[in-house]
Length: 395
Image 1 (spheres, helix red, strand yellow):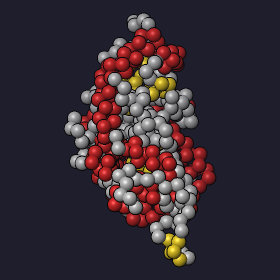
Image 2 (tube, one colour):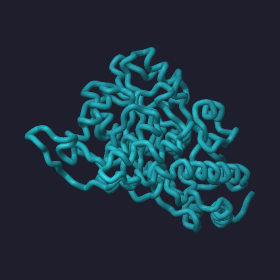
Image 3 (cartoon, rainbow, N blue to C red):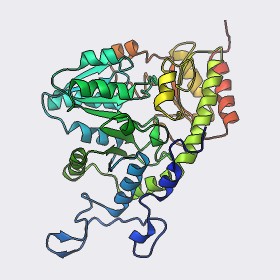
């Protein structure tokens, strides 16, 4: 693997938006600005910002940096990944139709299903987007938004982003295509270059990478869409604190270093699990056994540390396996430097209706791992001992 899948990624992560000359004393590290308001020389003529909800220098720095990483013209940050999703959804109105991946982050489908549909009068169709033909059949005259995850959460299905964009735009050029790029980060995949109109991230995960900030963002090349996002920051107020923006800006400086290690450890774990007799099946796009492996290699530059697998057993074996882990922590979320493990059926995707979970394959023996950047031998040894305790006998 090359040290930088996209040219100058590490340089941009460290320097974009960080120019010392923009500060009064040429600070190399951008200062933390906590002021909620700004002095105006004349009424209605602020130097730049007038109120902290509308803008903040520390937030400005972060947005410039994130836009550079995704090679986007614009970026807006929000108080969480879901508030970023909400900002996108609020672009649409009663009667509009959303086509969304069927296997998607539980919070996303919950927002569409329990807020957008009953409260705002939108329509939503969940579809398996690994088949472009099935996607095309879901399009309607009132379709205005297509929501993609690739790889999906938690089944790590890979969607042909360029193919879906082409099909959507051919049906109606005004359809907005959004890609949740949280699992991949701009280090491995840049959906705007594949035709997407907007890219969103839960910054909480890999981009911050330290499990100490909740935040989201949306990037776009469209001035019209960016103006909507900027207005949403002002009008709704779901913005991050300056301190959180400062922390994320700090965390990004090691993003390229962390992602290389996540990728190395993730692939090693996937190979170990695939060869293990106590495992039914491993889901990891870098494995040749993955159904969309070739597509993944075509549209992405690598893969993060997200690995899902089916344990041989049921809820009892899953509970035992997860309780025996030592290096891995049993917890929701992902993308931090530490290794996490969870059971989607009763944790991150518990809000998905039971019949939908069964149909998708989110069963009680599906384990999702966020492989961290600890020493790889220790990570694999931990999985090995937990598997042996959960399933002591192999028939």
